[in-house]
Amino acid sequence: MTSLFALVDCNNFYASCERVFRPDLEGKPVVVLSNNDGCIIALSNEAKAIGIKMGSPYFKLKELLAKEGVTVFSSNYELYGDMSRRVVRTLQQFTPNLEVYSIDESFLDLGDFYKKDIHTYASTIKKTVKQWTGIPVAVGVAPTKTLAKVANRLSKKSEKAKGVLVLTDEHHIQEALKRTKVGDVWGIGGRYAKKLNNLNILTAWDLRNVTNAFAKKHLSVVGLRTVKELRGEACIDLEIMPPAKQSICVSRSFGNILTRLSDLEEALANHTVKCAAKLRKQKSCASVVTVFLMTNRFTEQNYYYSRTLSLDSPTSSELEILQRVRKALKEMYTEGQRYKKAGIILSDIVPASQVQLSLLNSHHVERDIKLMHTLDSLRAKYGNDVVSCGVQSKEGLWKFLEEHRSPRYTTRIDEIPIVRC
Ligand SMILES: [Mg+2]
Image (cartoon, rainbow, N blue to C red; front, top):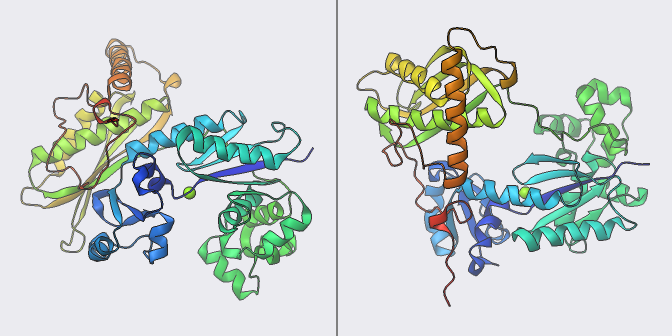
């Protein structure tokens, strides 16, 4: 039987998450800002209609946004992450074979999981996600992942489709490909799009009709896979279990310029705890930690400093890692420097199950594993701030700007919405 994939993509995801808890903003322009309230990273359709562009710096648009009555939010990743998990859990009702492609997109293998009418099934997915989570989504269905992407894109543009488009019929596939610019095809980046345009390949339909030899020559083997997918030949499988990351990084710009060692220590302790938690979540241990500091690249000549240290044995203990981080920081820190950003990178990552305990430190390692397990369960139950390392702090000069952040409605007990009658 032929394969059938759905791509479910949340509409204007960050803006939609904000609107779930602010129904008064339905139909009104909303924008979300990047870390430190830097630039615009998400817009509602109404904000797009005013002519506001993705990526514009916030400070340049402040007046315009106020004049047009646009509601501005700082990014609230805790909320978006939780809403994303809710959407995924809902989608899992429809098939066990699901790939979480990004925070707001999932591929579903619908192969055996629909009865008779696929369009009805896709509409039910859309309706159920909206009903259970409040998030509007678009659903594109087709025999390959690349075609499902095409279908999803068009489902949002077409009045008739209303967010659900099934491309299984050859005639419909042709029409859709003719209406899709080659640069909008999944996997064809800006550079390739330009090259293809110069070769007079302007639409996805043109691309589908090139020979295999042409695709291989101009677009490499990966491009050939894309061309085959456009022809309806499924070449890209679902990645149901994402591969464990080979390095994990946490870095942030500070809300203020930092000069004191103690402020940098605080910031890096918070980064370390986050990084180690990510490591434990994917059940891995790291053997190497890199700490980096940055000053302002526009005003200072040397702006990037880093130190890499190895850990005694592969670990996921925030306490172990933090010791090295503090050592690296002390070695790098120079009084009088004005620091703007800091980060941690954990690398040389191995599965926790493969870590050999050395005879000398096994007692100490086992104790740390138990301690981290306890910390993880306490934090899962009572929130991340319930237990922390001595050097961490909740508030500090390093905290980035988030003047317009909404409450973390779904993950903090003291921030849940209150209904008043
Ligand atoms: Mg989206």
